Image 1 (cartoon, one colour):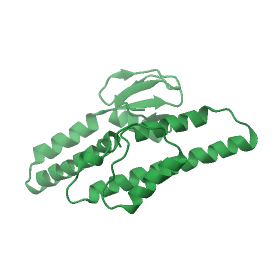
Image 2 (cartoon, rainbow, N blue to C red; image 1 turned 90 degrees about the vertical axis):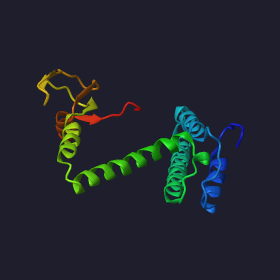
Image 3 (cartoon, rainbow, N blue to C red; image 1 turned 60 degrees about the vertical axis):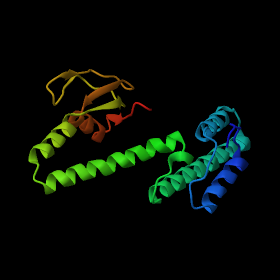
Image 4 (cartoon, one colour; image 1 turned 180 degrees about the vertical axis):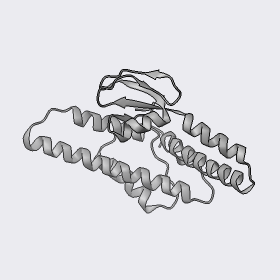
Length: 185
């Protein structure tokens, strides 16, 4: 599609139906996900009461379900195709598939290092993974802590965001004191 157009439930359904009925990934509006996000945002910002509010909430759920299904189908088609044709994939879908490629490469590195007895590489990978930092958002206040890297962190209030060593962040997440966030959030 060459021009960006406003999306509605009917046109989203048509895009989904076209994707379901055809084997290759279909060409769609490059701004589709942005348009859907705008549509949902506008619907959520409308102040309705009573039955109108329930209708609006149901409409948002229908749009979300159709979008979820569309994305799932398109990603699965791209992964299963013999030769990945990026031309009909949207940037958001390419972003997802890049992580699939990285996952495949990491598996190959670990397997090759294991099968070839490259213990130093395995140790480096393990240490690198353990020492990486994670961005978290605090759900509850917490006093200052000493990180696994022996640095001082905090104190933190609820809703504070911080980057902590993996082990400390994981412990706080498991105790429901914090949640992991990504830079995209």
